[in-house]
Length: 272
Image: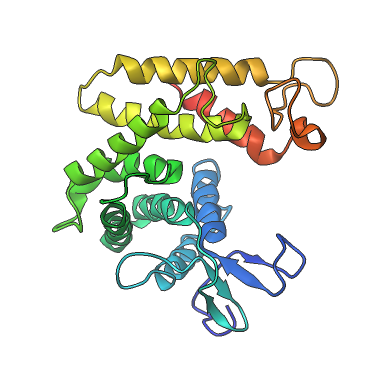
């Protein structure tokens, strides 16, 4: 960043992702950290540890005193308070946890737990809390590293309880054919499955069995498998936006995007 040369961020240029000016998104940088940390497991020369730490420093730069985050930073104008993302904090929690695995600095875990504490507290009295699958995904590795932090911002029990509540909300919304949204779309089902699978892993580590949770996951995976395009041609194997033959949005119903495929793969490859 020009004003902060010690920080590195993933920046969208004007015309990319509908931004009018160079913009550093919290979620974009968090996902870049996740991807690059994963790539380093195969080839450590992909990115230096110093560059990843500088990207982590940007994530901390975006965090507020209460543990929440700014979602965007305009390169020329500073923080953009007009936009808030539900998913960026969870993505950032996961990125910070992976940075801890990179260099063992407790600072990353503390920031991730501070974010988790803020999210749990802000949703405590909400009867219709959001379905935040990224937070559910981040909570799995975060709970496994709880003992590495002295005096964490919240208890492991409080974090687990929050994830369980979200899981119950997801399962309550599941339809008979396996999908979760009002319409039989692929990605809302896949992302919710990612969250449920993370919850199943958390409970497995505690020695807890939840047949209802496993049944919900299996039903959702079956729905997505039937949705996947099987006919010969360049679209074979792809995941369309809609899983209904007579989708109301016919123009976009058979659209295939990289995130539709990615969330499907993430759910299928991690399912218990």
